[in-house]
Image (cartoon, rainbow, N blue to C red; front, side):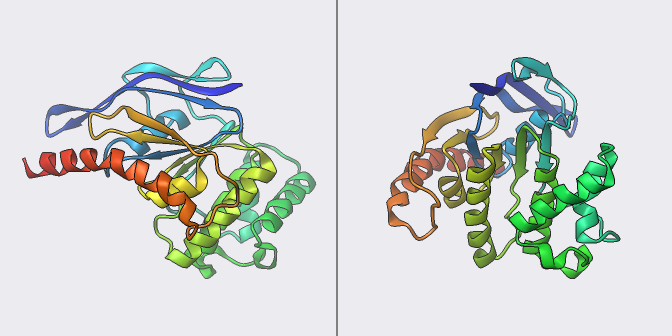
Length: 258
């Protein structure tokens, strides 16, 4: 069942008085329960596209359909996890996770039960009464993911959430996120500049062209889980994606020189 459709998404930005095309007709179908990873050259419009799906930005033309209905504004059925968790340092971990539920009017007992469930899922139970400024960067991202999942969105949007993490923490969270995805059957769209992340996480990898961006190729990854970074059998997918990206990175470099 098709969960989300992007139809001919076009987006322009003003740069020093000139109109620059960031997205030039992006088409994408996301099925219920997909884990879709988006990769492409730096600055090609990956995050812009995700912001449009989230309703944080508006396309100049084209439309986003969720369950067949057009969307253009933020909504609780789409929750975003950013590169930095955007947590409230003056609140405890449990209160950060409950925040969205509280704003949605969920009764205290119910939101506490939901929050504790996702604290356990993200292995944060013993840090429930800690303040987020007391946590490592990796643990803060766990809190951000738990807060997003507690809202039970139809689609979880993730914008390079592991980019600032050390390699050991990232590898651990890559495994945990796969286990959460299998447990919740959540539809996820995950933006990354890291090819290995896309191979480990995605059942679909969408490769964006250099600006003006559109989807160059979709690569399907049908491989057992949980996938591990050191699994040599994943290398064939890595090299497929790398081969598609080479010309786009070269084009980007030429644009920057000019």
